[in-house]
Length: 441
Image 1 (cartoon, rainbow, N blue to C red):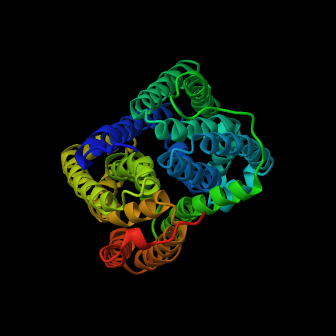
Image 2 (image 1 turned 60 degrees about the vertical axis):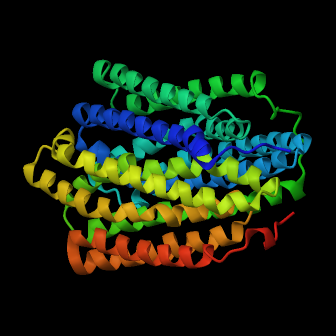
Image 3 (image 1 turned 120 degrees about the vertical axis):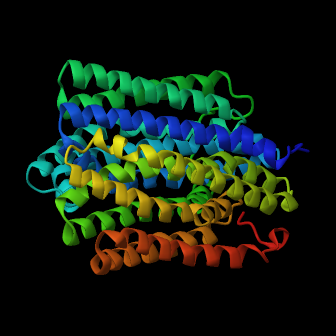
């Protein structure tokens, strides 16, 4: 029988560490982009923003394996079925490596076509193509390192995950200073720094997984189609969620290009990065941190603990995100000035942060609900919530709102969609009797 701690203890041990990790990594990435903007140009940031949705869609494929494995392994560990968890983990890592190898080859061969598809034109098309071609070299290391992080988290070592992620991010920043600022390698240097830091991350996590994990171990992988389909089914919700998040960002980029000005595109490219750092990273930290706990509670049939922990984590993360959003507000124009030299563009960026950032504060419960159902091995609900939110409501309402209301449409569309999802999440979760729901075996 597993002894479970209090909600506050889990929030502090798992979620707060992941929040801290995500915010620090985000700040380091911002510094990383400052280097790129200063020594390569602001078009670099625009190119990275344009290719971002496609990277999310590619990463979503790996999430299909990683998220499904994380929830399934946690569920098995909750039932004390360690051997089955080890075999499932080893098989999934093997299949994931082959899948990412294939994706890397495809992206390298069609990098220019992909860059054109996401809206890059002219000089930005050339920059985007180079960036995507080079960054694809590191897909394998990035994805396998993230997969090992999921397993190590399930093994009960969130502090290690925080340390190795922060270390690799700081290393990425230092390598960028060397390759971009001092050696003047341009886009190539920017990507090589990221790839090398991901490789170091993978090496450290591989060593920990092989020699330090207490429960989960790598064994000789045996392909079990039934188990693999079970993992893919459970991971399908997060796959659709991340893929549709990439689709949403793609639609927003296209709407800004079509209905606003290049200055709005530059401003949005910078502001969206800060919104991810100051708001979204907090909400994602909650989801990532508590996923293994929800899965283990479900496996151990501690049904009465699930909804109270979800409620507690949503309340705490709402407070933290609002506090960080307000604390960053007085410094936002200064931060924008590091990336944007034109005063009018800075003014546009500040308005977008104030309005779109405020609307983003409402994404917490919808995100948490999607994560929650994946964690308790109920992917169907997660799929329905994900598709409704990021395939239909957010892209459609935001696109139409930008068309009708200009730059204010970012806030209006996002806020409208999230309010609808908050109402739907609350109405569904409040009366739900978790002890009566069926788990797919």
